[in-house]
Length: 88
Image (cartoon, rainbow, N blue to C red; front, side, top):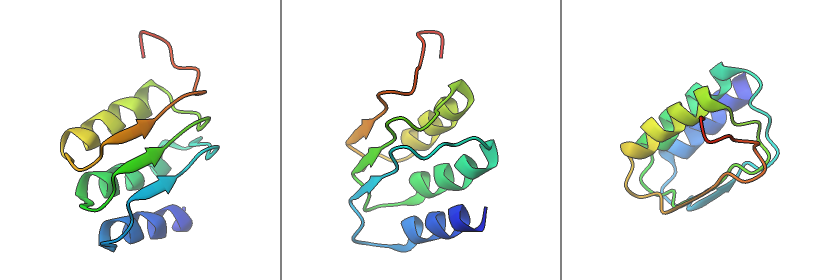
């Protein structure tokens, strides 16, 4: 948990991070993603996010969508291999 909090803090504060690769990070606990979603919402430098094969489910997808809605800087997001279904 502390690692995700520190990563979120770094994402929010850095001015040079443009691409983050979180492939294969299994977000088994919803609380981990809440820190990350807040950081995504507040960052101004991030442009590309990779979430391939990261156990993204519908609850996490909704939180991600809300974070992206507030951040117009992110231009690319990769979600393949998450077994998402049309109703997610």
